[in-house]
Length: 256
Length: 265
Ligand SMILES: Nc1ncnc2c1ncn2[C@@H]1O[C@H](COP(=O)(O)OP(=O)(O)OP(=O)(O)O)[C@@H](O)[C@H]1O
Ligand SMILES: [Mg+2]
Image (cartoon, rainbow over all chains, first blue to last red; front, side, top):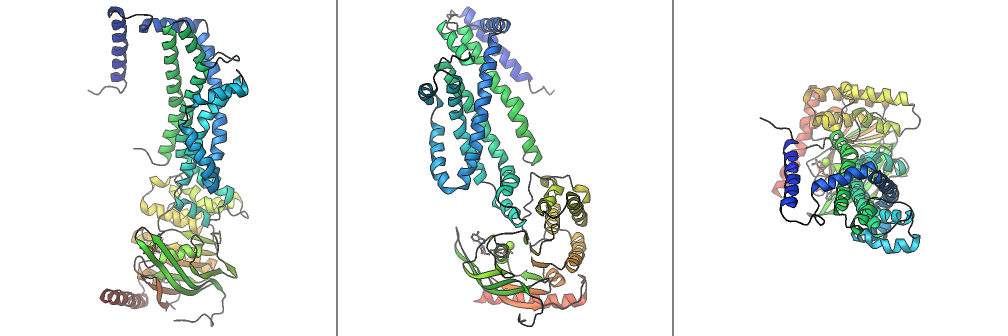
């Protein structure tokens, strides 16, 4: 008999949650420090009812989307420029490579000094988290476009802007997309860091909710928010990146 | 050999002492050495020679995709510096764009011709796709086509924009004999009607003699012109013409005599 693909993961997940619940209840574990799943669930239900989690998620998503959009909008042309112009690659490209390894929390102190406890401070941190990964990915994927495509296009009279929009970008698209995905992951992380470390006066996001949970010693809240953060990340991948990637792979015959 | 002085038609492409070196992983290679040649406007020139004798390199130089180390190449009066629409290349590998379907691939070159309307372009693209026997495959992406079909789309893509000079690198090598025979006829028709200049590379001597006004035999290491054959048979020529077989035997003899002598030395 052939089981559906989701059967085993579901069973394992249930087993894990059940085991956790059982362990906390009967294992003499401090329920304040390690809340059982039922507590997390009831916190979640409660915060759903009073709208807390929803509004926090919306605030966070808004920041994430705006920050990511700015980061990508800056990163794509800068990456293309790095690929096109040697000296830009040797300066900005190297800088991007270095800054990409810098954890974006490191930008928080600067952001606070420059922008204060404002929306712009969080956005700055998110953009700094996104842009360098996108720059590197775009640069790499543009540089690795197969020269045969360029030659074929050039002998048909394509050059300059036409060559970029009709050949280089389409050819580099799979690489650019995976760079965007990485940029998205970085943006998400830097946003959480910013929200946890900084009290932003202009909005109460998921990170702030998590931080508040710690202050109140509500570990059910802390873990509940963590679950939401993971779920949002997964969902973004499932409904946004995965379909685009699948379509790209299928239309070019790259599917395994 | 024929001198270029007694030709009435002007030279479309002029090569003077063209030399090209490569420094690859396998060391230094002189791919093409001291090649001088006039290709007349409206001439069908075929390059033959053993593998690695610099045929593709020569086409790339003519296309402006590579630069000569010594000597110069001119298109009419203009030196060839960069690739351009007037010298379209059909590459040895098919080089189709995987993000476009067959029709869009053929449309690519046509869309770069500003003097055509979109309907004229579509019509031309469909005409050439049908010519190569792929009228029913216009929606197919390159990966959904067989190797021979891809090569045919590439052929349609290079014919459709009707360039002044067409540079073709073994365009028929991946085709079955039947399609090939049919395309020999079609390409001769296109050549005679449109009066374009075609330079074609092939390993098939019969094909060379069937298509070429002149057949240039190159010798390898370094790539040089060994001999040039004038083919004076009337067009359209057919592959099974006995006169063609006689000429082909002559070229083959010249080719193999060179191969033998290079083995002894
Ligand atoms: N980019 C390159 N770098 C280094 N060496 C090269 C390069 N391109 C060609 N060569 C060398 O130049 C010589 C001529 O190559 P070319 O591709 O022009 O041969 P060809 O006549 O087209 O051969 P074939 O009939 O097999 O296609 C070969 O020895 C090859 O190794
Ligand atoms: Mg070749």
